Image (tube, rainbow, N blue to C red; front, side):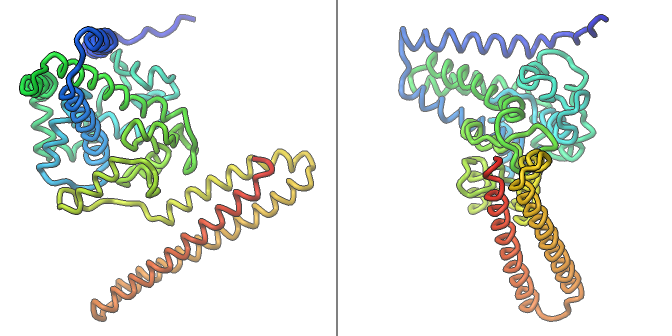
Length: 383
């Protein structure tokens, strides 16, 4: 049986990725050894690396692809310009590939960078050939066609790429007295790092890490990747709750993109930050905890292990309590929604009702969190 023919090579992306990587590996260290880099060239390397990286994570990804918040035109223009510096295609094309990835994640034919086709394919291989699954489907980004900044970048993408990747490094290098060093560090090396940091999310974040929220797809949470990718490494959470502006949902989780979006809201540059209800998050974590607990205990119980049988019964009772808690919360919330619809009293009463529901939600969340810890303790023996 003959193998199906491979799609034709995409020469533009193949040459871009190959030449920039080889040049960075060879030219950057050689120049550093023979000539050395000025402090200014390292400074601009750091500035451009962070600016272009965050323009992808906060701009291309969370703002435009997932509509997780709204941004002031000045901030959107900044993300548009430094997103072009990252050379990952226009916002319009990027989102047209990313939204189907979320809709069809792991599908061999419809996920543009399906990890089921291998880590190399998910990381970079999908861009090196004209795979049908990798062709952007613009029906998913009709909303972006109404965004003037998005469409301006799309129409003028090549000039913007040249300006941000060649002209700007040359200018700042000339002003600081180190043109070649700045171009090599802030232009070339920065670009290669930007590329592969983003690509890690498509590849490593779908195969390396934990699945605390959902195991229906290959996405993983990984704090190491989060550190390298401005917070994008909490990918298991993101695939289940993609409209949340946070990826690292816990306050202590490393997510500079989250902190940037939140911080800019205090000066009016971001607004309408979307978050997932904390009870929904706890529910997802506890659902996975029960699933993991059953998978750990059941094989031992089926072999007649008396302790495992007892633990399985305890886990079943905990699950019944979990279901009852969720039913209680749903019923109370529905009653509150109905009451507010019929509310004809003053604004003060309505605010009081909202506060009461908020307090009750915190109580339910605490109960679910406590139950999650109990279930974890139950399965330590067979973990």
